[in-house]
Length: 214
Ligand SMILES: [Zn+2]
Image (tube, rainbow, N blue to C red; front, side):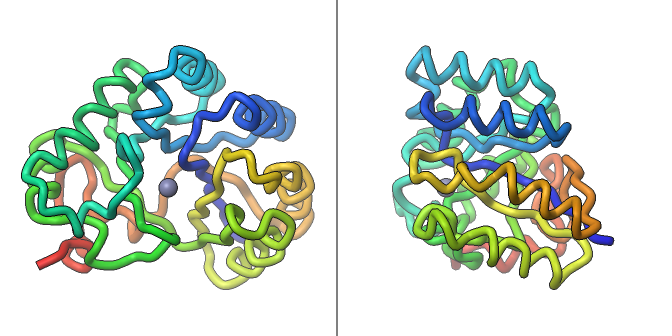
């Protein structure tokens, strides 16, 4: 037996997100979609986020531009520009725990994820920061990711996985992946392992320091 929490980053995408939602619905899997502010600024994509939320998935903030890991930014306004602006666009679709996932550039964890100012902003806004412990690289290997994803599930009791609702073709394997996870004894859940949350509703957790640049 193992647990798996699926998350989908960088959308919404009109050509991909609806199919992902249909697949999740067919298999009664609830997940979280970490959306980009610049995409939500498009009314058609905002509508997709509304559908996502209405179907029981959670919506999280994944920055506005997704252009630079926040720990590498020297812009004093970066927290407001990347997080605040996106949270405003998410508006009433936000999860009560105000979920935020930093941009890792290639999925890397480390001190490049956040800086002091950004942490202060997250604490003041009572955000929860949601990292990950599996990143099967679906964005660069549209056909090979399921094998790595299954391997990750075998390495830990509870996997928090990053996938992407992006037009790479990778999501054509999602249905089969879900079926194979269930066949292997996996249970899907929507919540997150605590060790992947360096901030919980604004409260610093043990993993926070490792995510903050000097
Ligand atoms: Zn991303």
